[in-house]
Length: 97
Picture 1: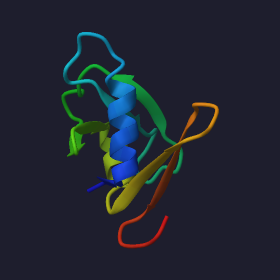
Picture 2: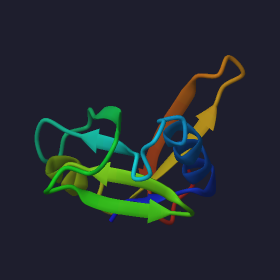
Picture 3: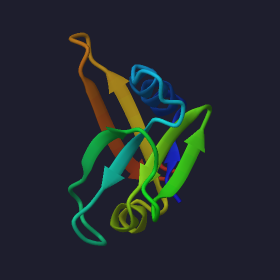
Picture 4: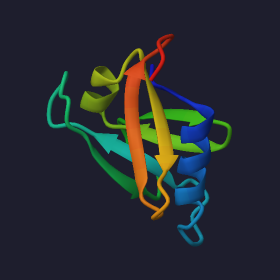
């Protein structure tokens, strides 16, 4: 299952807390097919029925079925650049990103 670094948890919480009046907002990651290397990322008010839910330090990430397969055993990291943009990185668990 996908895990989140402390930095990714913090960034995801910061982003999703900006959604007004939605307690279950999370970052939803989807892929066109299993094993895909390209992902779509959106802020979602809640998970879709078949999403895998990953929670870490209050951050919620919803993985569409294909994304859950592709990201199994991976770790998500995130950084906020000086201009305020967010950069995500995916690595293999137990290896430096």
